[in-house]
Amino acid sequence: MGTRKVRPVRPGLVAQLRRPPGGRDARIMLLAQFLDRTGTGVWAASSVLFFLFVIGLDAGRLGLLLGAAAVAGIAGSPLAGHLAGRFPVRSLLIGCHLLRLGTLGSLLVVTRFDVLLPLVAVTYLGDRAAKTLEMLFATRVAGERRTTYQALSRSTANAGYALGAGIAAIGLAVGAREAYHALILANALSFLAAAALVWRTREPRGQGLVAARTGDAAAPAGPPGAPSPWRDRGYLRFVLLDIPMNLDDSILGVGLPLWLVDHTGAPHALVPAFLVINTVLVVVLQLRVSARVEEPRQAAAAVVLYGLTMLACCTLLAVTAGAGAWAASFVLLAAAVLATAAELMRSVSSWELALSLAPVEARASYLGVAGMAQSIQKSAGPLLLTGLVMTAGPVGWLTLGAAIAALSTVQRRTAVRRLDTMIAPPAPTQYSANSA
Image (cartoon, rainbow, N blue to C red; front, side, top):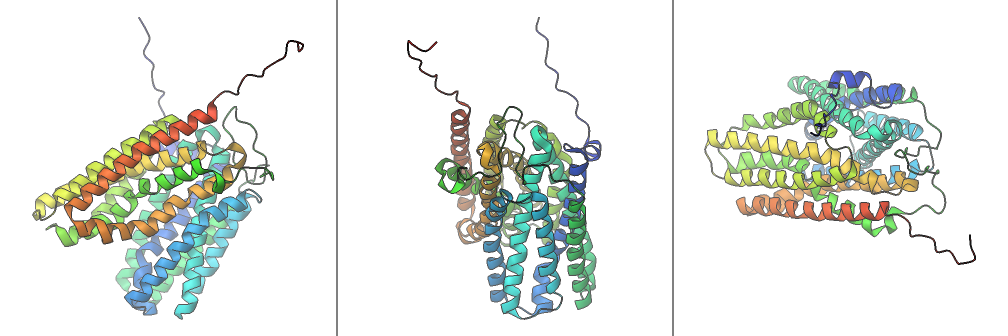
């Protein structure tokens, strides 16, 4: 009679935050990320109102400002990956924090639009670059337990966002110019505190290169002959397919609120509940989800689950069109839960596949290119939802859900095929009869 395999009991969230994969350096970095995301939450909740009511921008110039910032953010990830192959990640990350400290602090005195435009663009570029560098740092210090570290990072980040939004709510309730300036100063100071904490970490040998899994070849520091992600069609295909695998972000932040307001009878006061649901579920469940996706093939399977979950979410949104207040409210909350469940799977699968599908000797530059998927989605996702999906009504949601589900199967097949190629044994050496 066979013995049943028992899954090991894992420590809870608080216990793992005290002793994260990577030890002291990882613990310091998680605290730095918490402070950074708290400041980011303050800015995200107050920036639009600041530009409208304090700076005095109209809707057109505000759209141009945010659009330029989003485009600059796309360049942040590959730039960070490129530099991380040549310079220490720790130094680069400190530089990103200090760069954002300077640009955001300048908003306290700058009011001209032609100066605001590059300042905000550089701030967003630094933001995306910092996130990529944090990913590289985690991969290096956490080693084989990188998915656990990523889960802790996600939980910490969401707790920071929630705290930042709460701080912003206090300032927005005051509404005075000085209150907005205090919120900007709080965000800028979070960058300074994060930079100070990162400075306390130690940079392992290797000029910022990521650590390999057990059994992988050592990763040299970006040798001249290292492969380029821009010439790797297979990896670029993965990144391209990963863009729609990030659409849960735009659906939760843009699609759900606008659909509620324009197409359902649900009360507008329900909109903040979407963020609350998302934040709480990510903090509570991310570690448990990550524990089930620790290998590349498990990550590939999770992509399909992501697609099916998004299909279910979009189907729920389609059936709420014209629904009454109670029915629409219940279904929309369920859709928010599904969008969050998809996010939980996506955050793990995308992270693991981006790393596992990259050559060991060039992971820094490859991960920088992989980070573009999320940046591009943040720019194009809202336009897709508002310009096409919601214009088409319920049919638009059903079509979007079906497309994501179909593309998720293509992504899984593509990832598995590349994994098989990467682990294929070398061809046997042919020896002549005289060699012995």
